Length: 161
Image (tube, rainbow, N blue to C red):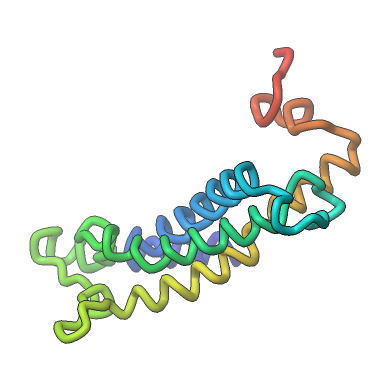
C-alpha cells in the first residue's frame, strides 16, 4: 500500500514525493545539530532510554527547523518540473503544463495554500520521523550491534569488507 501511494504521489507531481523526504532529512539533520549544540543543557533527563544519545533539545530543535522548512520549502520547490502532474506533462508538454492552484500564492496575502499543507506535513514529520531512529536503535540493541555495518555493509561504522 505504501509503495502504491508513493507512486500515486509521483504521478501527481514530483513535489509530493520529494517534499516529505526533504522534511525528514531536515528533521534528522537539525535534530542532530540541535542536540549536539544544546544537548542536555536545558532538559537534564534522557529523552528515551532506548537511545540515550537522543535529547529533548534535539527533538524540539529538529521540530522547529522542520516547521520552518515546511513553510518555506513549498515556495522554493514550486517549479513546473516538480509541481505538474505526469499526465499534464505527457498531454500538454512541460511548456504548457498548468501548475495546480494550491501552488499559486494568493495575490492578497502572498501565501500559497500548499504552505499550510507543508506545515501539517512538517508537524507530522517532526513527531514521527525520530521514531524511525528509535526503531533502528531497538533493532541494533536486540542484535547487540553498535551500528548496522555488520548487518548491512557500508551502513554505519566501519566494515571489514
